[in-house]
Length: 54
Image 1 (cartoon, rainbow, N blue to C red):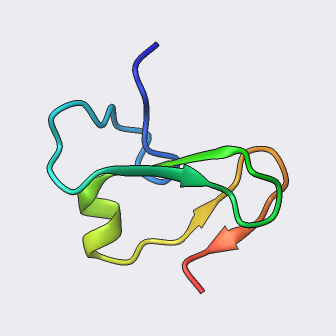
Image 2: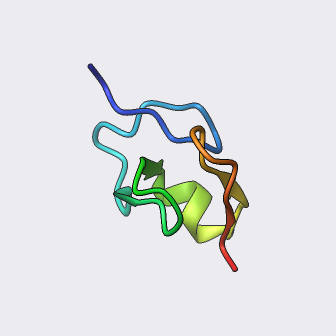
């Protein structure tokens, strides 16, 4: 399954600067595109509702 940014809903394949990391609150995987990170777009964990960046 292709990973999709939780903010922009865009597949992150071949997007420079994209990352995935565990949610600080529940450890669910968070996927962020390079573009969402560059503009510091807010994300929400799909499992617990944690929001970042803080």
